[in-house]
Every structure is written in C-alpha cells, then in structure tokens.
Length: 270
Ligand code: NAP
Image (cartoon, rainbow, N blue to C red):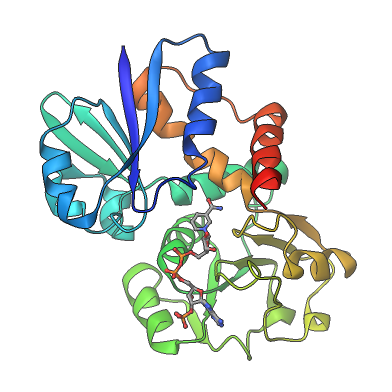
C-alpha cells in the first residue's frame, strides 16, 4: 500500500489530506496520505528515516529540504523550492508543481488563454511569484513584475525572466496588461491592492492565487469592470495532481465535486 505525507509546521490547516483522501476514495486506491508535523530541526531525520513513498512539502521546509534530496527537477532548481517529493529506486527526487498547477487551472477555466501570449502583470515577488513568473515566462508572456520591495522583484527577474520589467505596486501598468496575476498576500485580510482599478482593461483576464476569501477584493473589482476572473482555489487543486500520480500510479481529476468539498471545508473554518 502506497503511503504519502504532507509535512510542515504548522500543518493542521493543510487541505492536502482532504484533496488526496478524496482521490484515493473515488479512484478506489488502497493508500494513505497523512499530515505530519515536522519542526525545522527534525527535517533531516524525517527525510532520512521514513517509510513513505513521498509526499508534499509546505512552509517552512520548501527551501530547506533541497540539500536533503538526491535530485531536483529542473523546475525545482529554477524556482528554488520543492513542494513535491517521490522515490526513484533509493533516490529521493524533489519537484515544484505550483507553476504547473497555475497553468493547468487557467487551462481548465479559460481555454485558449495562452494561445497568443501577451503582456502579463505579476503582482508580488515572493515564493509563489517565482513559480508563476517561471511558468508564464516559459509560456511566452512578456512579463512585468510589480512589488512593494523592488529589490526582490529585480532579483526574481534576473533569475527567472531577464527581460521582465520591474515596477512598484503603486505604478503597476494595469492599462497594458492582458493578464493580471496577484501573488501577494494582499486580499487575504480583505484589503485591496494600492492602485486604481479603473486603469484595467475590461478585456483583461485577472486571477488571484489567494483563495481565502475565494473572491478577493481584486477579483471583485475586476469582475465589476467586466473582466474575466479566475480564483486561486483551482491552482491549489491542480498542483496536487502530479504528486498523486507519482505516489499512487493514477492521474486524478480536478472535479467540481472536489472543489465543493474543499470550499465547504474552507467555509467551515472561515
Ligand atoms: P511570500 O513569499 O511571503 O510573499 C508575499 C508577497 O506579498 C511579497 O511579494 C510581499 O511583498 C507581498 N506583500 C505582503 N504583504 C504586503 C503588503 N501589506 N503590501 C504590499 N505587498 C505585500 O508568500 P508566498 O509564499 O509567495 O504566498 C503568497 C500568497 O499566495 C499567500 O497568500 C499564499 O497563501 C498564496 N499561495 C497560493 C497558492 C495556491 O495554490 N493557490 C500557492 C502558493 C501560495 P514584499 O516582497 O515587499 O514583502
């Protein structure tokens, strides 16, 4: 029976056991997926001595785990963080599936969105932004990164999208954006990004990777302007697909039923 983990500290809030548990049940696979609280000091021992087939890695271990693994995928190397681990023989491999999850979510909700890649405005330059910028650069978008701390945006661009333009959040060029992606944590507390949304073109596609609340103030304002909007819950569901396939041998589907289960759980804990 295959066994997978999600490790983090804290870990009780993770929705991953619900997602993978649903897929194990609906696909009739005998396997387990469990949340394990691992403190940073205990990470090396956990990685060296466990009987799992792999698992997911969340904060604060996404970077610290890298030297403990035998191989990183090229994506994990570029992004500089690992969220999915599996075994290949006696070797442990680390990948980062956030960018693939971001792309797959838009593919599912807005088919054709990357057929003619235009200008993408990425708000934020933190860990999640790295995966999003990497994925958008590889999809051929011309990228602008807007962040409160400009130096962080510059460093991100230098590493992952050397032709990207850099601005402050206040000067984000909304009027030129075909695609707007919020990767900052602004919106989680109900606050709006510090710019005038009226500059946004109504034909722009706007997505937020924050999913609590599901409709962030940015998405609400964009919808009111007539823009197409995509929330961040789908990215969470889609980033889980490759890991499940590695550990349990079947590629699961992101369905409306799964989304409703997670939404109900988010509602229950709101
Ligand atoms: P992070 O590394 O801490 O980065 C946070 C980003 O938000 C930085 O760009 C930071 O700007 C900006 N920021 C935070 N507070 C701000 C404020 N008051 N004003 C202006 N900018 C502010 O976090 P992360 O790991 O990238 O995660 C970001 C968000 O994405 C979180 O809400 C997380 O839950 C969500 N997320 C969702 C998914 C998904 O599957 N949907 C996956 C990963 C993450 P500075 O650089 O100036 O500090």
